[in-house]
Structure formats: C-alpha cells, structure tokens
Length: 409
Image (tube, rainbow, N blue to C red; front, side, top):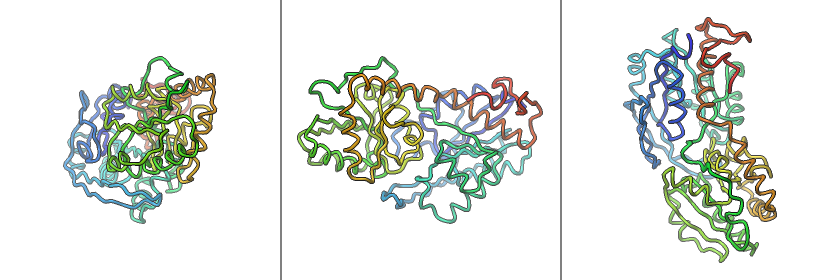
C-alpha cells in the first residue's frame, strides 16, 4: 500500500505549534490524517489551541499531575495523560497506521489496538534524552521496554534519544530518526545584520526564550551572569527574557551590577518573537534538562549564534564550538563566564561567519523533511511486517511520492 493510500492516526499529548506545519505536510502525503490529542493544551503552556485545517479530536482523558525532583536538581510539574477513549476512537477511524508519541499510557493503548489489527502498524515516536529520562522509576522503565520490544517501528529525535532507546532494548534495525522542525513563523528570515550590538559602546544583546522555571536554568544563569559581569567590568550585557513562569518575580527583583541589565518581555506571539531574534546578538539557552530545545533551531535559523547548555539534546546535536555557537556546562560555576570571554574576543569577520554558519546548520531541518522522515517510518513499519508488496531497486519498499523508502531525508 502506497503512503498516499493510507489512513493515518497520530496520537499526541497536545498539538504544539511546531507540530502544525509538519502534520500539514504529512496530511498532504496520505489519504487521511487524524490527530488524537489527549488534551487541548497543558496548563503550563501559553500557546493557543489553533489547528486550522488539521483534523484534530480532543480525547476524553484523565490527567494526573505530579511534581518530581529530577537528579539534575530541579523540580517541575509532570502531566501524565491517560486518554480513556483511545480504543473506541481507533476502532471508529480504522487506520492503516498509528503513530503514537512518547512511551506511556497513550502508546500502550495504541499498541494494544494495533496488535489486534494485523493490517494496522504501530510507529512509536519518542521525544526523550538520557538527561530527561534520568531518575525514572522501575515501573516506567518496564513499560518502556515492553513498548519498544513490540512496536513495529521506532523513531528517535536525536543521538541521546537513540542511545537511550538502545539501552532499553530497542532494535537498531527497526529505528530511524524523526527530527524536530521549528515553527517556521518564529525565526527571523531576513538579511543578516552583523553589527546589532557588538560594535562601539553598545551592550551585548543576549536573548533567552522559554519558561522562567527551574528546569530552564534561568535562576542559575542569572547568578552566573551577575558574577560574570561583576568580575569582568567589560562590555555591558542586556539580557532579554521572552517567556513567563514562576521565577519571574525572583528575576525582576535581583540586585544587578551596573553593567548588567534585564528586560522581561513576557510571552510573545510568533511575529514578535521573530523580531526579538532579529534584534539580539546571541541566544543563551541555560537549561538544566531538555529532551531537545526548539529555541536552538529557531535561533540558528535566525542567524543567531547559540551559547547553549550541554543538558540540551539540541545543543549536543546542532552546536559546534566556535562554528555556530558555544557549548557550556551550567553545573560548572565559571563555565558561562569563560564562554562570554570568548565571545568578546571574536572579531567582526569571524562573527559574520558564525551567523552564516548558524543559519546554514539548520537549513535542512524543515517541516517538509520532518514529514518525509515520518512517512518513511510508516512505510518501513509496513515493510517489516510484510504489508507492502512494492519493492524498490534497493530492496526497500517503494512509494511513488517518496521514491525508495530510504532515499530521502
């Protein structure tokens, strides 16, 4: 069965802005795409639930909220969604392929349905990293191993995720990447300006985008920036924070040295966010634990070099020291100061190279490419269980819209 003939169901906790363009691309490649969303939006998100032309069904879900202490030293609410009507929804939709996100109740229910329907394949898609999964209990580990053994195909979102899944027993021969693609509305796509705030006496404009929470590391970064500015006495720094969260008041009330200024911009819609990417010199992403970190993609696409925490899988995957940014360890008290010292020493010619390399480094990470990868995963799953009968010249299942299954992406 060609991909264009298939009825596909995608199960997700909620439809994030970055999903929209990818799912629209996937919808254009299949006969029918239905999105089963556990909730319209999680309580700690400020995004609108706007799905436009996508066919989205919000499920009947029970949600359990827990606040757990991560080994990395931070606490954050964790939402566990149990979509109670999954079996009945899938029975009514009668899909040829089910793609489920994450390794919990949603995927267990989806897999249970697919095991009883031999003509329907299950693709288990995982967004995770070794850091984000640290400290998980034995029960979750057991559920994850069970799901990975029985999935027809598994996708991973980065190298750390792949290592994690292999450690849990996933079969390397039944895995493929499914890359994130940033919301194309958020990045600045205009001409590269190399002298925004790095020349003359202007302050270095530093941007951080995300929730003002412990996990995002903004309190740690604040302490380290204060220390850095007090000790250096050099160029002034203006730290622009886009986002909101429980640490806002703490940040607003901090006692700052004269060469450090903080501006709190709150939550911004995509058009305003792209202007922030255009107006700043670099992105600071100080997270203590992110299974990816799409703001890294957005900044790089905006030609913004990134100073990023090693606890972000996006930083680990996309940043090359001195080429499109710098990697640092927020657990080391003076690491951020050392990076900012390197930033001050970069001349104008090298900075232009950094900006150009930043944009080029994510040019391939588009919604079209991401949808292509997911389409290939579906076809690979069908091949592995013997449901496709069209063989490409390379031995893989062919699809008229993609060519040989492994030829693109």
